[in-house]
Amino acid sequence: MVIFGLGKHVGITRTHPRSCIAIQPEIIMKKIVVTTPTGNIGSRVVQLLLQAGVRPTLLVRDPGRLSEGVRSTCDIRQGDLSEQDFVIEATRGVDALFWLIPTNYGAADPVAEVLRLGTIAAAAVQSNQIERTVFLSSSGAEQTGNHLLGTLGLVEDLLNATGQNVVHLRPGYLFTNLFTVVEELRAGVLTTTTSLDHRAGWNDPRDVGEIAAARLLSDSWSGQQVQPIGGPADLSYREVAALVGESIGRTIQAIQISDEEHLQNLLGAGLPAPVAEALVVLSRTIASIKPEDLGRSDSSSTPTSLGAWCYAHLRPLFL
Image (cartoon, rainbow, N blue to C red; front, side, top):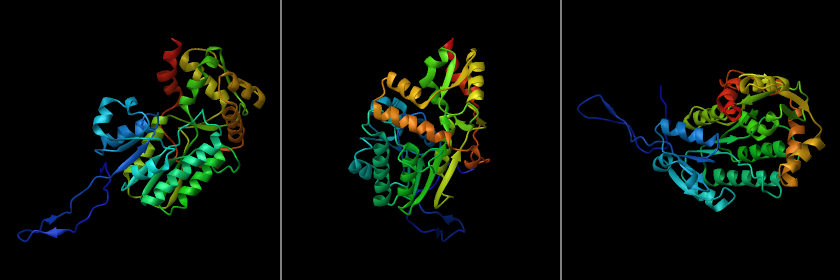
């Protein structure tokens, strides 16, 4: 099995005059750039690229957050993804790009911030003719409107317009979202604004990172593609509450709350009003997504179950 891709190379195949052995041109490993390398998904992408023999370039604001091992085996470019000149210069001559727009809870307008960073990514892909880009989008990005999901859809359009090969990964809920509601779980509840019977895919970020790394390493795909990522099963909030409760050894009740209650909870947690309002709209938009529209298949299903993840990562917080 080939576990690495080949980058751009120059040369022709020659035959040695005294044998029939073909001398192949020099092989140059792929040059791959990874954003958000300290995050749950980005760090997994980095790990797999290193295991595949690739020395990736990491765009990072604070290199001190990287382990010494990663710093010694990767090329580090320190800078901010919101600075277009930095991104274009740092991605010059690369073969593949992993672009993930980090959550900025301090942004005055988080929706506009997503579009701005997406525009910068498209400018870099266009300017440097990056052959393949893996973009972390989201389930529901096909929903139009001035909200986070609709804006991710606009970023997909911007990347497609570059004419380069792009795949948009669309995962559903990430298991790590449960870390934000630990205090709720301690109180024995799990709240949501969606119907308690509404089903959606739930994913381990590590599984998402593995799909991203596989795409970055492969030269066998082309065009502009969408790849849904739905975890091993579509789950309702009732089922999520039951699985979480079983894993942490507590009874957890799923409760549906109103948009206004959700907004007040977010504001009470210290989030700025624009961010809180954007998250409320996000929840409302997710509620309109039908599981059958997400395209579950073998390629969209991932192996890690919510129960197993909760037992490994949430349970220790309740012991």
